[in-house]
Length: 504
Image (tube, rainbow, N blue to C red; front, side, top):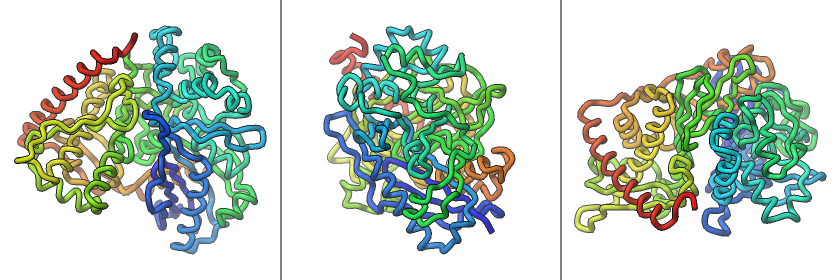
């Protein structure tokens, strides 16, 4: 009996899952820490975490996994990694972290990316990078260059969060084409590093790590790492991918027209296409998908709403640490539309679907004589769904057909209110599966080490557990509620535009 091990490095926690190769079933899983990892925000709009904390939680989660299921570590055939996208980790020549990681929801580089978009030319950026440089990793690196030159001068290599964990496991400084694309370090048209953007920023390509294939033996577990983890030295690390490409992979979303979604700390809808398409305003973004090849391109078109599970978590603290399932039950007691209460969930950094405008969360239409706790909880869940639907409309404008969506049976998709709002406001069919990100990383490791001969073979044991379809009556009610939400959003954006023009 052999196993595959997958790690999911999120901004809230780290999860480890162990899959049996013969059945494709998860036999054990562990999460660390119990409470969500803190995000440091020294200034409004900033968001940082200590990479060393991610590594410590990898160790903790692995020990919990071994305690719960006493497997022989020598029988682990491969290790896969998935990670929070767009983070920036800086390493010196000794392999030490130079500063806390600037993570995905940090907004400090918005102006830098917008200026690059204008100076390099919007047409050039969209045709070559398929994105504005925006608030992505390359622009965050430029912020460090401009504002922390003493740190920048010490950089040996930059890393994404998953690259850093792989480095701790193997000692190898590496990344992937998919990873480079998520930082806007990749020129899609020329199939090479985006040297035009790096030259504009005055950043040497030498700071980028070696490129390896997403599915490949990228290194072996060192003795030092194996000792810390309680695993077997020499175990191959054979897959790494950002959380959203990996979430799609975990759901067997690999072909053009297939759609995946997730609703964790952030909410994402991710669709596959084979064309060089780009949204003219870079509100939805295109990255290299995990099964992309030079001869058969596969790209992922991604919409992201930052304020998703983090809003639900914030509300949980306000209601006295009530269990999430109890919050879901309470939300269901309010009627569709929450009696006119509207929640805009934009309180976790610049939102790309809003063109990176500096906006915040808003609760509108509150009546002390009508609304209770249940209405607020439901309005929050509906507001998140409506924000996702707003993004799906942009995806549709870009030519992505959003009709059937696959998701793991986890996070906010566990809520009947959330599921009902999702299918009816977006007029989509939703399929939920018995998987999650860490299981996807484990399956990816199986492909990378050659146990599965292609990504398509990796899904033994993947099962659909629920299908939710829209209904005519509910659609009518949700469309009315969505129209109110959309009107509130437009009013807010118009007000903020008058205060702070998007471009000076």
